[in-house]
Amino acid sequence: MAKLKFVHYINQFFANIGGEEKADYPPEMREGGMGPGLAFAQAFGEEAEIVATIICGDSYFNENVDTATETVLGMIREKNPDGVICGPAFNAGRYGVACGTVAAAVKEQLGIPVVTGMYKENPGADMYKNKVYICETKNSAAGMRGAVKKMAPLALKLVKNEPVGSSKEEGYMPNGIRVNFFEEKTGAGRAVDMLVNKLNGREYVTEYPMPSFDRVEPGPAIKNMAFARIALVTSGGIVPKGNPDHIESSSASKYGCYNIEDVTDLTEESYETAHGGYDPSYANQDADRVLPVDIIREFLKEGKIGSLHQYFYTTVGNGTSVANATKYAKEIGQKLVDDHVDAVILTST
Image 1 (cartoon, rainbow, N blue to C red):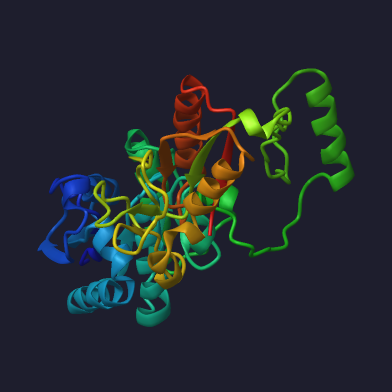
Image 2: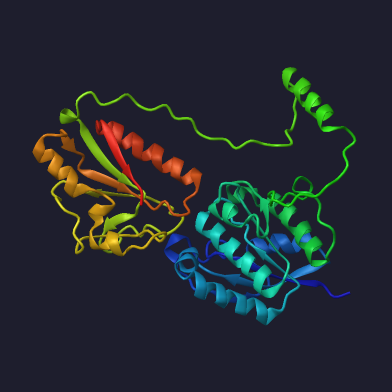
């Protein structure tokens, strides 16, 4: 019996081509499996094989979504596989969006079974979990073994057109599809069991997990703004012309810090936005529309505020994971505290 054929999509990092410096790597197809594909091949055993690996840099894909998707689909068509695997992307935001985009296109345009995997907070998860099967993974590549353990059996089931169980059984993220089944106990009985276990400190699993939201207490009001030191921070992607630190247009992996000590106006010649989630023309014409340096300078002259911090911090919020956003906030916040900043004006788009 011939082995089932799979094509595997990965990024430049897992292809061992390079990190962020190679994120602009264009789509390329190589014969056979490589990187995490070797783990999938081992998990498939004699049932299936990776016949080709498609590689694409995260920045290239997200900055050229339409053309990159079409190119990748063309490569997959060429191999005519039984199934496709994308990733896993873990908590890499741009990689997750790319995996989700490719997976959805493979399913919708080629009609080929496809599976991907990523961390629950990856922006690609929210975007595509209702369109394709996304196995939940840990937030880093340290969880590769567990990811393959979920993804490989599910991929084989889909290719062989076998019944797929619930998300809890198969390890994929809930996708909004409800299937009726019979439980031994009624809902009331199960609820009482959970309550008793909870009251006795025993382990229990809810059938309806609630979303978790941060509750942040507001800081005390500034008593006198005329003596306050104010800092500007933005997720709108405002950067010096040329984007010297190469902050990504989506799923940013970094933030920038730039000196505006002698700057009174963010001119079109000197500043622009790196953001890829909104029409950049207005921000590029006048970056003060996103980062109001000009207005703050007016307030300074009028004595409405005490001083403007000499540095502003910037990143791109488009598709950036909650984990990365939290990390940036903690780092930036500590630097502002160390620099005796009293308050922050945080702008988006």
